[in-house]
Length: 369
Image (tube, rainbow, N blue to C red):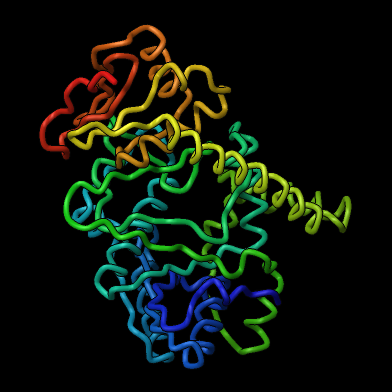
């Protein structure tokens, strides 16, 4: 079983997302049994969604597992997390998407409490395949089709307004929508999310649990075929594996090719954003609109994402959102355009900057060279 423990360095403080299911049961057991040699500090974290009557009992069961391992255990209800973080549901996203965002906020809260730098999640190869087809069905772009990454960054401490009507959100990626969270109050910690089981199959995890006499919880909603992920898991993927037993390995190679292409775009994006950015005497950063408009649309899209992320602006990169920005840039060489509750794009002399409520004062017009 290929578990990438090297994703976690020695002396790491790790929040483990623990639902009690077969996948997270195996991950927690593996990490605990390697904790002493790696000097890891492990916290088991269970979010009680309160969607089913048995959820409170399951939370207690997870607590008993953590006590068996002699590790800290944290649990909160979904409602409690919402009250602390002010994450509100959006009519444009599903119940599952909203719950995923709240889970990430919960993990961030636990990490802050325990001064942890890492969040370990039990996504496996099957989850990877399911995510790819979900995003394919929903029309994702290249980045979305790269599916679940071994490592990713998660902002802790501030998930403010991520589910308001003006800034809707799907924290991990519905239709290739990545959340870009602005940390507006207090410190913003970049937590590293790691997925050591991403190259392990579901059957390998079940076998591991059975061989180590580990029990786990079964979620009855996993049998509901009206949920797209379940439908893909129960019908589409078994058919593909039955058609050709090379599907699993071939699928992993395809993901690698897609990721290499995305890595190249990311590299070009970083270089381009740096080259079109100037900083004035008041430390305001401006981008050159004329150069941006000459770029290939794919690079324009990526540069704007990187620009907004750099300026810590919360947004969802929808097609309509980008079209609105590009239309403004093509029609105006000066002026401003309000796009969020507390931020706007300001243009002057064919340059643009972002001003927001978290920045004291507004940037003046850029100085002429």
